[in-house]
Amino acid sequence: MNPNDEILNNYLQQLWDVRHNARLSLQQADLEAIALELGLTPPELETLRQYGGKSLTRGQGYLDYERWEDAITELTQAQMIFPLSPDVLYGLAAAYYGRYQAQQRPQDKETATQLAKDCLHQKADYSAALALLNQIDAAPKPWRRRILTWGGVVGGMITIMGLSYALFSQMFYSTQPPTPVTLTSPESLKESSSLVVTDTDEDAIPIRFREANLLLEVPQSRLNVYADAAFYKMQGILVNESQEELAEIEAKVRFLDNQGEMMAEETQMILRRSHAPLRPTDRHAFSLIKAVPPTLAQVEIDFNILEQFPAARAYESSQPLELVWLLDKPQEVNLAVKERTHTQRNYTETVTHQAIWEITNTGEVGLRLVKMQVQFFNQAGEVLEKRDRYLVSSSEPPLLPGETRLLKSILTGLETEFSEYQLAVVEAN
Image (cartoon, rainbow, N blue to C red):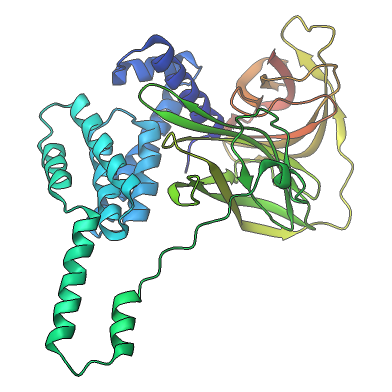
């Protein structure tokens, strides 16, 4: 099971902010300290480690069978959890170089070289990385390979006098250059019925997206270039415009240069089973952070709906729920909550509780961070459990006045004395 998106996104954002603002060469212990400072519990940190370890194992398996695209996808996921791991950095370097050998993309060769050097920065005696650098340096240049290939073809045709001119043409020109992707301007993208870009910054990265049953709102699409790395960050909101309930959605993102050539790609689960399913017109916020070459010019996104089911003809009305504020609430800040669903399963020794809430910003200002707490009580009013959940994390689009988002909570292993719960606000900025 993948770790919670908000845990991972907050961890990544804090990691790179600290690294680039303080110009630190972080160690793994520093990364774990950052994670704990963000409020991750040791079990959540262990979940991240397990997720990263499994991605590394899968990635290394794909490497063994020269499945370069799959290896890059898995090892990139592992790098998100273990950005300083020599094994991860070397594996990614080998995968990019393997794809370079297969497809001759110069950017893949540059990426492989940099990743191998990053690996050696973490572990100076990593011999496999040194060997890979030597292999990259010794690789024939693309123009040299073409000359050798063409010489062989011409020599063969001279020897075999019976070849026709048509065969000569087919052999010599059979491989056509790729047709460049025509870049679409941000202005024309904003007119798309399925895409609304509200990032008005002149440096905003254009996005290509069209999907009949989904509306994509993009408040932010930015490229941040630092001295030693570049990162693309997108904040998005998906709106379900279909007549289905959507339970799982995967995004495939391609990062293009100004010639329309793909420099990198990323596959990310946008909507998971741990989220509330989207009924028609429901909204779901997400964010994407990806290390990319600094020459990024455009982003192309496809969404794949992995699980859906027919929406009901009519839904029961959601019930208003009293909200508790565990902070001094500013006058301009306010939220209203309705309980959409609430289920409780009683077992012999434990109780499982699940609820979905509709939470609306009824205040006067947008909220960049909203942290909620679900509190579980017994009949005597004693607290049995507390669970913190982010309605809005710092990496996601802010919750604007009048906007409604969903929050889902599942808790297993509750004591059988459980009687009721309440929802509280811990932070609202």
